Image (tube, rainbow, N blue to C red; front, side, top):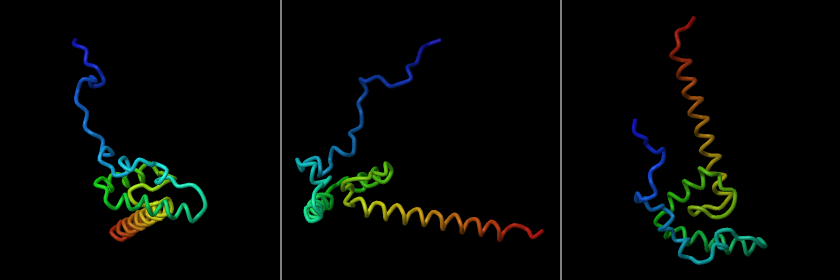
Length: 113
């Protein structure tokens, strides 16, 4: 019986990762996207990072990845830590509300005993 490797050989072409086209890769200063310091400096650097994100062609992919990984620090996809947490809370709330509506619909359609 022939042997088939479990992984593809390294000689196969690989697709280009989405972050190759990211504006932040061209900025030259990753510290802008992970600001540390007093509140004024952090706000200034965060605004600068978000300005890069506004013109980034892969912004949606970046944000989706950050939300999936639950990135706790930095600016990703144009949102800072607090904005991403709020977005995740809203999404969780919508998910819970949808599940509750589905449960109510199932209960309403069940025959009375």
